Length: 154
Image 1 (cartoon, helix red, strand yellow):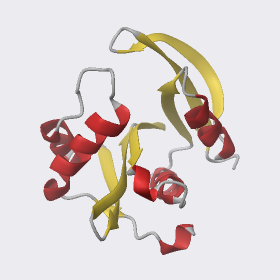
Image 2: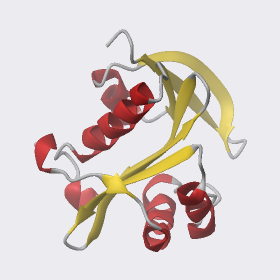
Image 3: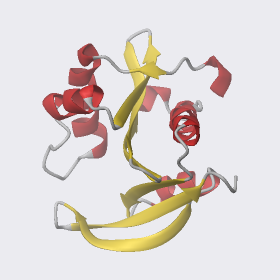
């Protein structure tokens, strides 16, 4: 089903919706850090891509990836609950991984809440390996697990 998802770069008009999705779907129980202004800054950044999967109602999902010289960091990924389990998150990640490979980047990192077994299993299914536990990563109160994928080995 991935082939039916049209992924595109986000525009400034997408920032409010992405920010609200982050607040409501990802940052529950934490301070709201991914505000529309911060998302808009990422959209304008030369070292960050914000990709979205459009839907008839707006956006089905989004992913934000920061690119460095030799590695990339998937900093945020969200899919509306009504659109989950349709391959949207996988398509967004594949889009970013292809961009990283095109830029000559071979390693992607991502963090997940340590107590979120479902998300960690999702990333493992996509070829990511758990490489580190990061204490108090989220707002200084919640642990994360860092995962990595070697794109050149895939």
